[in-house]
Image (cartoon, rainbow, N blue to C red; front, top):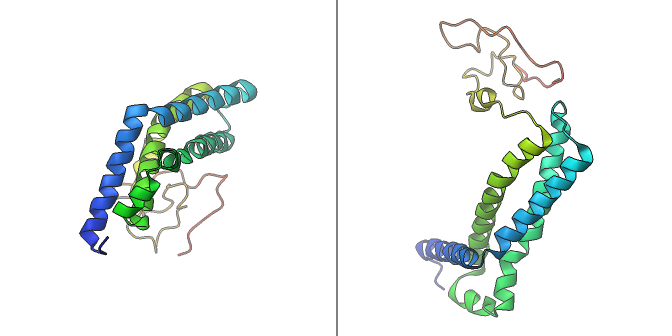
Length: 183
């Protein structure tokens, strides 16, 4: 395969399309991963119970469930090629880097679909508080050299952080957060 950049992008796109089509036809991987994630979520929710006030523990449990669901389905990326004896043909058509990037993009897309189902179900079963969209979407201070706010909590502590014409918010850093930016 020539080392042309456009042919590499075309090869990555072709491999991504091939993986998506193959998964859409069989739906083996997504069903197995979703079944694993739902079974794990059910087991965790029955074992631990509802923990609406322990966001640190809820975050750890969510990442563990997502990690094991992703690892259970990650091997599926190359198993199809090995079982169908098409890996050699795939290596003749595309460079190994293009194959790896195409399969990586497919796995990221696969994980995003898995998370779209798993995260809302996790929030419901575990009684977790809903996401706080305000702090998530808040834009950082435009003058960080004069700002003494905590970059982890997104709460301004001085008038320099407030938008022009408005007063700074009364709340500053959370008591549980000890990280501050240096001036």
